[in-house]
Length: 459
Image (cartoon, rainbow, N blue to C red; front, side):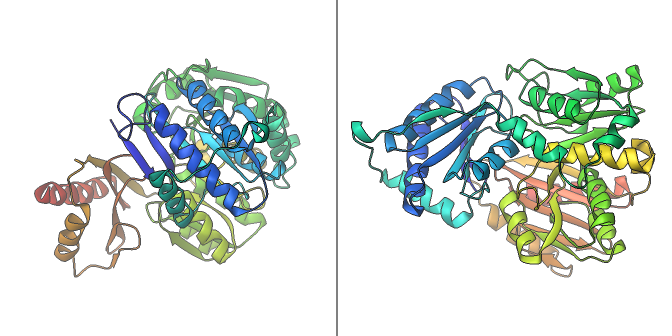
């Protein structure tokens, strides 16, 4: 089992021994460190807390809320929620920060503390290092009994988030309503079962079927929205002759679609499609991480903008977007970031914009997919032992491919004429991820296999 500390938060498996897993002692320690760091930033004392539908969620939430109160911080609890909802609520509540209790795409035994600053954005690596140092030294002081923090509930956070999406200038509720879409949703037994149907209703979609709709945290399948996990959704879309299938991850910041014939739109193309729609109205620059498809670059150039790659990780994408004044950005895992709504991945705004695009273009989902460049990404991973020196492995591979263009900003990215491969350690799991892209599926898979063979040789 594991405890991972990174820019993606404090993530680990529930149970086991402190220091090796996400135990109650670890939850209290890291929450206290984060709360202490927030109090060092200024006079604000309000913290927003929300959680996904995980089995451990209520237990973790109780520990987090009590710890923040014990520091003298006031907690606004949005309860069962989504990551983007907590992010926008930090802004609307004028809070000092927020904590989202979710391990995102990880299986049910995992949970995590995702830490936000007062802008509703993930804290950066420098601030994260400060929090970890405070935790390591246990350098925090709890409040006296007369100065304990308060606790309040916010039951309208999700509705306010949905209202903001419905009123977003590029979302056309009238066009969506007239299209009379029939939609199947895979909510993976988490808060997508609450948020996505509520959004669709607000958008005028009346024919909605929700699969895995019990918010139990007992995921019906692996919660990462990858092709091998979405067979139920694909089959149901086909069986019901639906217009579209929608899949989200447990905290609703990743999004992918299933076409009307049950085929996959492709999670890499979620951002591409929505960027295509946005750039038609607002030409400008775009950003995605360097593990994402080059199709976004093709689309951006088509509309006269410039594409910029970033290191993997939402905070890195956001920082690059701010630096280049991007009008849209995100990640190839189905993450959409619209900066004029908020700087965070948001599946809900992605759904609204995609339905608007379908409605206005008069195209089916599969027809729309056919308008984009066809690239294939082979996504693979190799599990690591804690003793492995990953940098040494990367150095040896870099030496082997020294005649190819190489980027070491985030792990190791190697160019092969029109193809590429990206190797990096995960922020969320003890693994090396190997992504390879080409015009041809077999070529992408062969590149990935070759690199995986190189890695295993050095392991």
